[in-house]
Image (cartoon, rainbow, N blue to C red; front, side, top):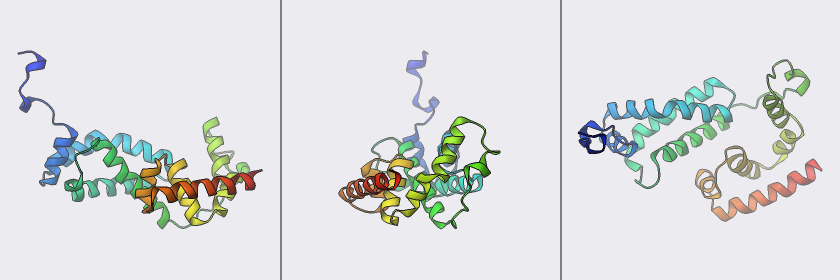
Length: 184
């Protein structure tokens, strides 16, 4: 029998099928979803948070949320996108709970920098931009973090922040105006 005519039982289940099985209580299906997705979820979270402990906690929380909420997946879109939405919301929540971190100057961090990309990130995180971002109101800063730093669309940011999409756009525009003045 050719590969095109294999029996469905021989084929690996799709992510959607696994989510349906998780919703029905299958721990084996959750284990398979975890195996398929833990790598890229961890990498993407690590690009947004330098603390491996926080990343590990968020990965665990993400898959616990998948276990508890698999029945809420609408069946529309890709399961991986749904899973990423959970992960990024968990990361935002975890970062909000953290106490403020001490500011490290570029000179202090120079010994830790390993690449040009790291140097740019240190400058963004601890340079003038970081101060300007910290001076934004919490509402404006949350929109900038969601749309710029986390790369969410306006609609995704609106869902994450629980505000209308129009409010996200307005706050993003106001944040850009404030940042332009601060950084000029």
